[in-house]
Length: 205
Image: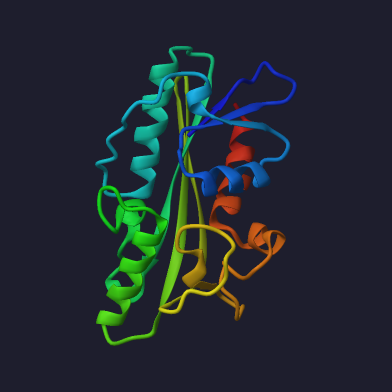
């Protein structure tokens, strides 16, 4: 989630995530902003994401943080994202961050996804990433999306990126996100596309 103080000359984006990879990526994509974790402003608290879509889960997080901050002049943004694999009927989808279990880390999630694809008898499958960003402020709720299409494979390649990046090959490329450089990933990223639209929304507030 992202808190924006519109009174500052340089907007402050505060992310409500403990995912270091996501924090690093958004810092790169939003270099014009000052990006910090939301726990720099308020104490960390649990948010139950029990909706059935990326959009609704992003809205749940944005609303929760907006209310917790207690300042109606603030603009809050929340990101919810994940990977959907055709061979698994769209799984893990909204469960991407916890696919390997409640306490699973990136390696656990990736390992389970690879095992599940192999269990279908396939070594690869069409797949896509989705990023939904919700923007909440006084009397305002907006959502935008970004997508990245490609193929999920069962052999991890590359040390870059995070999450499922080592097994995802973007459409038109022969390298995984784990092998591609940061500049290329920035151009392709589902989150980059969503943030680009989110910035346009912010200009209208």
